[in-house]
Image (cartoon, rainbow, N blue to C red):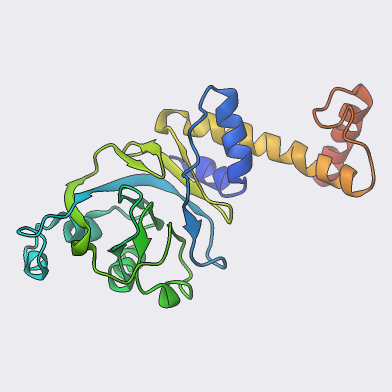
Length: 236
């Protein structure tokens, strides 16, 4: 993903992105049940680096499992590339934490763009104060070993009922997280950026008391002329 694409994706909403993806035939791109922990955090944009959990098993998932440096969760924390988004398939189960404050702080300090799980994170009071985007389904204090067994890194996963492939572009805002297939990211970013300009104009007109008829969608030629003048005036 080039810097221009990243810049455009950081400037558009997940609402606009999912509409653009729908135009291209993609209906299932918005992660279900995933919420931003820290509303003051910057926007989330980056390629997915994935971790997959399966249900825990008592003979394998003991506290001493973390003594193994090859444990997939701990290895992923150290290997997720800077600029990527750490995306965890927790099978939609927040009964135990997918990770916590220490591991997420390590990701942040390594330059990772953010973290997403359809399960839960622990240490959420501290996470809520971090200037780094973190999304989950619900707070969860218990250690991951109670419910989750880490098995794979950087493989296709499901997160929030959405298929996420390594390298797919994750975009998050205050509403949630959208997943863009990697090969479409540049085109979707350009289209969504253009649509955002139009929607900003429409919003201004509606706030000024104008009807949505012929404006949204824009079928009235007079509104198209007004849009062209508005764009020229604002340099957009």
